[in-house]
Length: 178
Image (cartoon, rainbow, N blue to C red; front, side, top):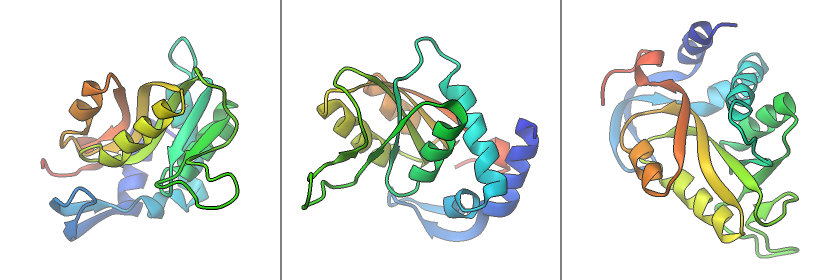
């Protein structure tokens, strides 16, 4: 499947028009419902393969991928299956039982981690995940996302020294300018 065909299929399946309040608190007339493509194997597989291709395109390769819960976990799993790179799950809050972990999975301090996110608007959730990974002693310099809404997330991540690499930008999915 070509990049343009994948963009078209994602937009057909998941791009909604209406009046939406985003996680950032901003209003939008368009919303990309990530669960509409993440729960469809016919889309999740190709998206995972495309993310895996991006993940392995740089040298040095990351030791781990990471997906913030909940939306990015299927993406990180699909990319891990396609690339062979193990992944971590970053919780929104540490669990209050058993290991009380914020980061789930096996890792060693100092490893390079590539964070995968679904949709980035201002980057708030992604920044929180990066901060948690760094607090655990991991190195994060790159992040991937399925869609960059181009509303400040890339710039916010750059301030942390993290380069954002989206599979798609707004125009790729036929979204109007913010």
